[in-house]
Length: 434
Image 1 (cartoon, rainbow, N blue to C red):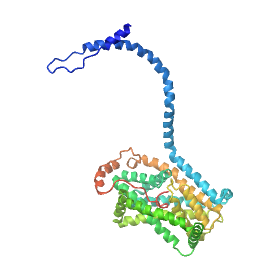
Image 2: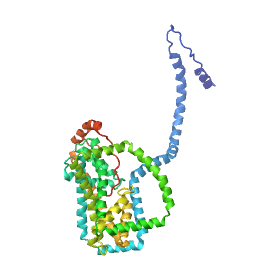
Image 3: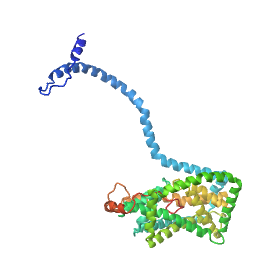
């Protein structure tokens, strides 16, 4: 009863009427004297509730545990999603290869490694290094600067390693852009130069493909194989689904193309190509070096086929290069990291179209991709560490090098004259480091 009376006394109404304008301000001492006893009475209750809160803490952690575990799992999935995608594409490549060749052919290809011509492997490694040297020359031409060839080549190895976990060559775009910024090129101009380098590889590869496929003599096999497969596909598929799909996709493609032509990304690409065309010498270097990178990879692919006993002869070099150009273009159409999976299947199919057996075709593709695709990865990682140790060439985004500082101060001036955001490169077979 005393507690209730004390609570009632403390809960006595307090006047909330506004004081008169001329009245003196009221003191808060009476209100404080009323609240103090209530505070003293609530303190023991707080002490009693504290042990209960400690006992409920495990239950709280149990309730929030699934959310914490889900957050950690999401972080783990994000960290390993790229490698999971790479593993998935590798599984798809194996499945497609087995579907095209059969398990017996794959076992025969594995057993035939003991009889292959291993003397071709050093030549394949040399061609792989030359591929990255010409890629560095392509970057020099697109940037319009005499970049150190050694450092630029190391950058291309690093870009190749980055491309193994990024689709459509985005890793190479980021690495090359960072390298140019470290060399004192403003960020906007570096992005435009790398974009021009990527896009210029498309016409260079088209001209190379037209030249190789147009050579008289041995390459008629590739053209005949393509024509025969196209005719077979046309016979298997009735014409009305093709016309229906074309009637739906053509208007959508026109609408998308119209919007894309008005986008800032296309504007930046056109600006970069226009600026490159104003420098005929650099344009010739860019196109020639880009075509050379693709031709070198085609030559390496042909030598990989020649390394397999009985697969082909020296007179089949031109059709084999043509098979690589067609297969690499088909594999690059799928935006997988480094064309993993799609390129292997397309190259095996191109060799099968030339009449090469399934076993030798699989063996040749395995040799080619092992030397030119996977072997440069550790070299790229070592090259990245080497570049990080050089103050003027550090590829660490948090570094503040003098060249990067110069580029940062010059970037606002360059932004007024040129767009500043890079775009995704066009899909071109081996125009840049794979």
